[in-house]
Structure formats: structure tokens, C-alpha cells
Length: 432
Image (cartoon, rainbow, N blue to C red; front, top):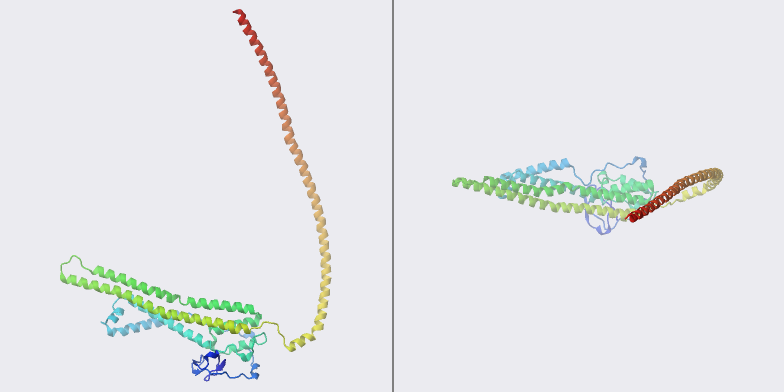
């Protein structure tokens, strides 16, 4: 339902179940009760008579960081608050609580400073989160401008957003919806709007997640400082212990120093653990609140904005009449364009045919040339192969013939030698 603030007349919207609840106006911070029933919107209000801002003169507005706080401002506030807290404990010196902060060395001072700095950052982030929650009460998409958003009335919705107070205009929800509507006005495409909304959702989530990096460092550093103080106190206690001395006063003084060092050691660790545990609870609550804000914005875009977008090419009656009057001229122009296209197509076909014949002739001549070259290469290879195999065969036959002649001559020589040996043996036998 839609309603107005009774103090500043700022348009807002809320769900029906919130009727009767007391809320604070995001524009003037005045508290009022949400009416039970929304006032009916006159039928004449559906037509916007305000002058729209040209699209070329928009360009958005400077956006601040809605998740991270100023480093220098938070550091300065933390220094002032820490100094004030420690000076406030000076009149209570001697008590156990005051001595933990004032008489345990620099480690406890550092732990207190980091703890207070973290709380300052959380308080500043809480202020930003409240501002985001207030901006979600704004009636960003009023039903008086229409039940759907199309190319003819999207400019009125954008103009409505530009008329919001600048303090509320620069918020996560308003910025995301404004970017989606401006893209829809330029491109008239629902899928592109969905893509930019999802991308902006991821950017906001990453920015909020990154804003807790310094706080996570504080949660890690505070206990580590406690352990450093423990080691320092134990070192002081051990070094102050007098050994080998028979003087009772010296032993008493060393024991006092030992107990004092142990007190520093245990107090620093205790303070570091307690402070880190205390800071973890508001940090987790703050992170959960910011994530819920992003969830509500995503749900609003998916349930309220996207269903209202209509990128269909719907034309009004005047547009249809104008198109009907210009139809004969459009048909004649289309006929002339068709004739010109056919003429150019015929010329292109003739050119393509000539190019095909030229290419065919070139391919034929090239094929003939390749076949001749291949045949010549085959003949040359055949002759060279024949020479390579026939000549060695002839030489081998000649070699075998000469070898046969040599064997014959050798056989003849051996036969002669055998006959001569027999004759010699016979002569020796008869001589005996």
C-alpha cells in the first residue's frame, strides 16, 4: 500500500501487514503511524502532467560508499574515545578494574584502542544500515504511474526517482532500480535489465563483505596482543627473580616482581580474549543486518520491478494510424528495393558464372600440366630404376662366369697334381 508522511508529504510504500505500525519517516525522521487503509488513487492521477527531464541531462548522481566508513574519521574518533576512557579511569587507580587498563603496559592500551576503533566502525556502519532501511520505505514504483513499465512511461518512473530527496536517493535500492530503469529506457530489453541487476547485486554483496576486513583484523590482533603481553610479563617475572641471594629483603622484592610480572601476563591475555569476544557479537549482528538489507532489495527487484517491465512492441492508436497512412508509400519503396535487388542479383550471378568458367579453364590447364609433369617424372623414375637394377645384374653374371672359369682351371690343376702324385708313389713302390 502507498501512503504519505504527514510531516513532509513524502510518498512511501509498505506491505499490508505493516498497517498500524509506528515508523520513522526517512525524509524528516518524524514518527507517525502507517494508516490501516491506503487512500484511493484518483483516476486522473494516472496521467502525468509534469515536465520530464531530458534523457541526456540525467547521468545519475555521485554515489557514496554505502558499506565502508571513512578510515581517517573512524581512527580520529577512536583516538578521542580511547583517551577519554583511560582518563576517566585515572581517579579510580588502585581498584582492580582500573589497574587492568592503566598499569599493565602498552599492550592493554593497544587492545583497548583496537576494541574501541572496531566499535566506532560498527556504530558508523549501523548508521548507514539505518539509512538503507529508511530508503526501503520509499514508494519508488508508484502505481499511479501505471500498472506496468513500458517504453512509453518508463521516463516518468525515472523522473519520479530523480525527485526524491538526495539523502534518500543515494541508497542501494534506489541506485539499483534507477540503473535498471535507465537501461530499460535505452535498450527496452528485459534480459539486459536482469543481467545488470544481478551484476549490481554481486557488487553490493562483495563491497559489504570487504567492509569487514579491518574488523576481522582487529578480532585477530586483539588476542595476539594478549599473548604478546603474556610472554612479556613472564619474561619480566623470570628476569626479576633473584637467585643465589641470602638477603631476605632481596628475595621478598624479587618475589613481588615475580607476582607483578605474572599479573601483567595473565591480565593482558584475559583482557584480549574478553574484548575480542565482546566485539564479535555486534560484528556478527551488523553483518547479518546488512545481508538482510541486500536480500530485501533483491526480493523487491525480482518481485516488484521485473514483473512490471514490459518490453513488447506495443503501439498506441495514433502510432497505428500513422503507420497505416504510410503503408502504401512503404509498399512502393519496398517494391523498388525488391526490383533493384533482383537486378543486382542477376548481375552478380553473371559475374559469378564468368568467374566460375575462368576458374574451370585454369583448373583444366593446371591439371594437364600436372599430369604431364607427373608422367615425365614416372618415366624418368622407371628408367633410372631399370638402370639401377639391370647393370648390377649384368656385372654379377660376368663375375659368376669369371668365377666359374677360375673353378674349372683350379679343378684341372688339382687333377694334374693328383695324377702326378700317383705316379710318384708307384715309382717309390717299385724301387723298394
